[in-house]
Amino acid sequence: MPTTAPRLATRAETRTEKLDLRLTKSAKRILHSAAEAERRSVSEFVLESALAHAAETLPDRQRFGLNAKQWKAFQAALDAKPIPAPRLARLLKKPSVFEEGRV
Image (tube, rainbow, N blue to C red; front, side, top):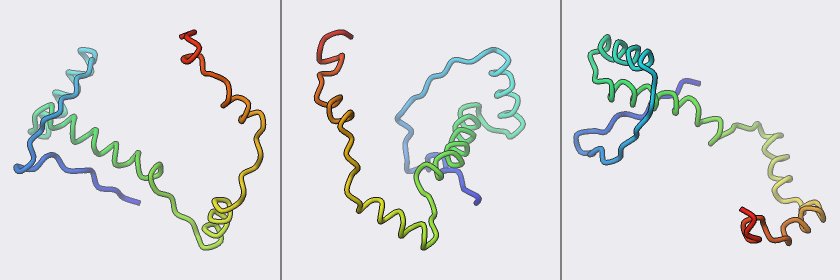
């Protein structure tokens, strides 16, 4: 399913956030060459490339599709009584390592 990358800021939007990254000389050279080939700044090239990759990565983690049978099973699982988990209940009653000051 094709996705479209989020667009860069429009003229009405001002870029106020900054993102720094460390990279090797060869990686910088490649990014600079690719940006130059597309007649863009390195910042624009990197931002648009990263946003396009984010647009491909996120949909399957934010949305999922179910057919009618799967949806019914999903709803039943959500509506079902929780399975008792006594070990988990005991664990959650214990103070964490942070609360005990061990970390």
